[in-house]
Image 1 (cartoon, rainbow, N blue to C red):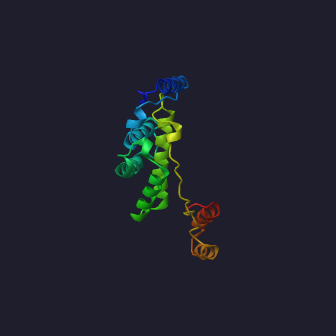
Image 2 (cartoon, rainbow, N blue to C red; image 1 turned 60 degrees about the vertical axis):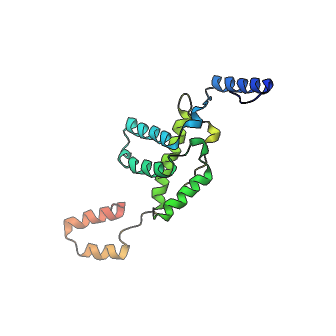
Image 3 (cartoon, helix red, strand yellow; image 1 turned 90 degrees about the vertical axis):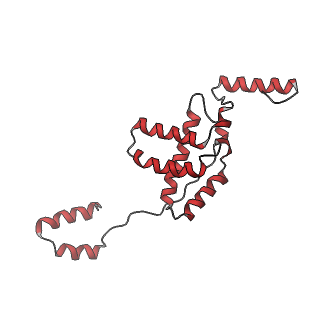
Length: 171
């Protein structure tokens, strides 16, 4: 239904829908009914089909997203809702890297819904999801002076292995 009493408006609405359908972009009422929890099921199925190694940690990411955003309709998730989610997770003491992995899962859910045939959501309904900058770059375990002191206390066959590990960045 075009939800209008004007015949011209109804015909224009119908033409728009026919054009969307011809281009494979028609989503209809499904996108109005779909929830974030429905999209997260797509991600879970995608990880299972691809055999991703990170699939075993996916349940924690999906659980966190589903508990806070799962009840929302996919068309109602805005950038401000995502920012509120991020703030809430930070307030709970979660690391920025953890939040980024959860948001990456949410982004993947929206991409899968958009790529689904027929699409489950229109491209203009996908919220902007900005990730945190992560500052968790690994640093050397030993400074050079500590390495030299350690090397002086090691027996001959082991010092070569430690030198190799130090020079190649092994931990």
